[in-house]
Image (cartoon, rainbow, N blue to C red):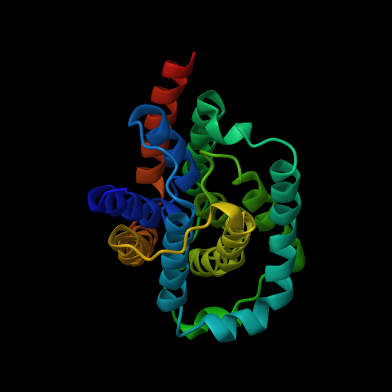
Length: 256
């Protein structure tokens, strides 16, 4: 892998991991049309560590307090994704390369994001400790977790589906935003664990492209969190709904 490829993949991972556009869907897209092969396992681990650090840095002022207040809810919301993820991982991984399924999943993401624009909410997104005073009920947590489980499908955005579910369940944008991304921590850790189960292909040699990919994922991850915060605060998720609709329609036309 060259340094340019590592930079590109790191930026893509950081941006699409947190923006509501589906990182797994874009991976299918790039592998199908740009002839980009699956990156080395250690590189994939490093870019996931980069995005994990981005979340920890971004929410550093409220991570502990919010987690203490919502720990049971975070656990409840994590369970559906674990069940669905293990079921898929132990049966068939072909869905992660299916272009037709990916196109439909992008369209589903678009619908979810568009529907959030029809929900009345006035609370701006702020990443302050005040968010921790707003509790998420166990039922709402399970609802959000179910949407996160659906987001295992390539093309369904994890952040988009969980933020949408939070807004649909009556949470403020502030709480939905924060809960979604703190919930992403165990999701990213789970992806790391799955990658590390196959140690036979794990070459831990730290190369320049690996460092570039890690740094690019970290920086672009922070940028994408700030961008999504800004868009939610000033407007809504409509730009991402339009993007995923156009992309899904394009891919659907190609796959038929």
